[in-house]
Every structure is written in structure tokens, then in C-alpha cells.
Length: 365
Image (cartoon, rainbow, N blue to C red; front, side, top):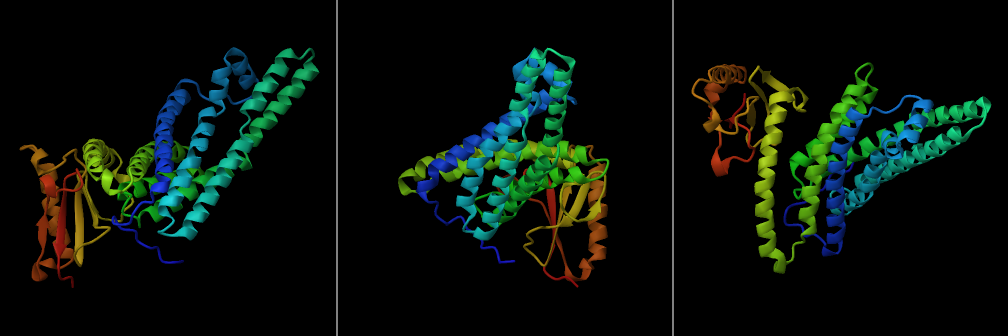
């Protein structure tokens, strides 16, 4: 495996691609909206299971028939094309080989979905079924419809899902090496598409797939933000405007990120992809993914506290478990002799809007 090249904030963005980044950002935002609409449609109008149900749905309401056969999902995949192209242009400096593989997988997955979606064919068969004059003709059209549905849920669909998910996982891994993209965006992409591949877990696969949609929604919002930032360019004449835009985006994103991080740690802490050193009902401790010291452990609360100032006076459970956990870690790593510090940041010194503590030491035995 070739070593990934790290791209820093000082790397310039080629202004020739600004419009591609902006179009891709709009596509990502529109996809996020469509995902919400798809969830509503799925809840209100569950997809039909048989050809006769599909034919009846088309005859009652053509639009509802197309929606039931994943019209919006097809549109999602069409919108993914400019997103893949923009991400290739943006990330090719980090690792062009990985990006070529990811984009190729993505395009093949999109093509497989387009080729297998039966919506138009089922609409045509529905009309022919309604116009059929004999039971034999209707039986023929029903058999053709069942075959269409079987093909859609068969090999082509699974090829599309697997290649598409693997493509976005690879993109997100490369994204970790480019400082123009946030770590949250990269990790959300890995988590969302990794969960989608959980479809193949026996018994519980469908729940993994459905659950992944929430993280995919967040990923599209995050990727739209990053693409719009790239589309702003880096020329000197745009410097002041960019600073104002970045300030506005920062303030807006800070509110969204705070709510998202709170929700994840409060309700979804089990899905955070780290190896736990300790975990209680109110906190979790793990090694810092980018340590600044020989020993660097993060202790993050599961409670909805943004900072130390949010802890109410009667909150005893978290504080007790925090002290007990720190004492346990100090004993485990024998830090009493070498020395240690327990730090929490606030205000302008706090990067992540979720209360957390750093247990650090310069010497580890």
C-alpha cells in the first residue's frame, strides 16, 4: 500500500474547479433533502412486495408508484456523479490511486443501479396489465412484473450497494489525510457506509442498513459544507469575503455540530469507532486518535454537557464516575510516579463542543 500524502491547509485550490465544487455542494445538499423525503415516503407508503400490488399502485397514483420503486434513490445516485468528480479533483493529490479506485467503484455501482431499477418497465407493464383482455395475458404480465422485481433485488442491487459503500469508505479514508476536509466528515463517511455493508449480517442486517441512513444524511451535509468552502477559491481578492463566509459557516456549523455530537454521545456512544479503555453509564475513556503526548487519554461524557459550565450542581453520578475512572487509569498506567495532568478546555480553547477531559503524561512505563 502506498503511503498517503498529507495535504495541508496551505495547499492552493485550483480556481478552474470552483464551479464543479459548487455544483457538487448543491448536489450534496439536495441529496440530504431527498434522504429526509425518502424516509418520510418509506414510513407513509411502504414499498409493495408483489407485482400485482405494484401494478395497482401505478394505476391509483403514478407518482406514488415511481416513489415506491426508488425514484428518489435513482436521483440520489445521479447527484452522486458530480460529488464523486469533485472529490476526485480535490483529493487526488493525497492518493490518486485510491481515488481512481473509489471513483471507478462508485460509477460502476451507479450504473448497476440505473440498469436494474424497474420503475419505468413496471409502469409500462401496469398499463398493459390493465388493458389485457384475458386471464392468460394478465398472468403473463404478472409473471414479467415478478421477474422485474426479482432482478431489482438481485445481483445488480447488491453490486450497487457494495461498490457504492466501498467507494465512499475509500474516499473517506483518503479524506483523513487532507486538512481541507474535517475529521468529522471523514469519520462520518466511514461510519455511514460501513454500517450500510452491515446489511449482510444475518438477522440484523436490515437494521444496520436503515440505521446507516442517519449517518449518511449527516455525511452529505458535512461534505456539502466542505465542497462549498473549496468552491470559494483562495485568491487574494476574495480573501476578505472568504473570511466573512468562513466566520458565518463556522458559527452555523458550530451549532449543528454541537447538537450532532451531543446526540451521538448521549444516544449512540456504542457506535463511536474507538477501543474503550473504560466505559460507564455517564462517560467513556479511550486513547486519543491523534495523541499529543506519550500517553494521551480522552474521557468524554455521555451527558449533554458542552463544557464544564454546563454541569449542574446536583450532578454527582458523572463526577463520581469521572474521579473513579481517572484513579483507575492512573493506577493501570502507573502514573503516580511519572506524573500526570488532567485537563479540560473551555471557551476559545475548546475545539469539540462536548465536555471532555485529557489525561496526559510525558513518561509512560
